[in-house]
Length: 149
Image (tube, rainbow, N blue to C red; front, side):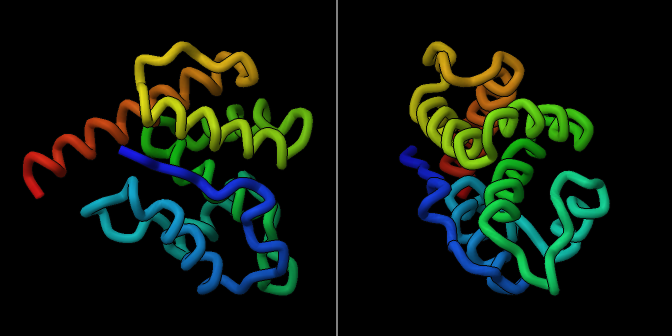
């Protein structure tokens, strides 16, 4: 399965309203949410803000940082609790959110292609383990969907 996430620089660099955010997120996550309905809804986004996983929108608009965090949250929630996701996000954005997000995207893509690949050196151990779990979950879902479309 070929799966890619947009890199930090490819995420829209302008403020987006909720409907635009949902379009970007659901388009990016579509390949790994086959048969599940939308990957993210407005209620989910609002809950992530309420749980302080990301900052609130400014004047009802979301930026690149919000999109990156929402993408990571939506993927990690396949296998982790919200409390665990908060801890992984803190690890990933320790240096910078842009670098952490790009590292997350690259490592997840690599593991989806080959779930048995060794952990990448650039990723904290807990984040690498979480990404391997996400990659395995995506693989199981894909195999089940192929068998029972």
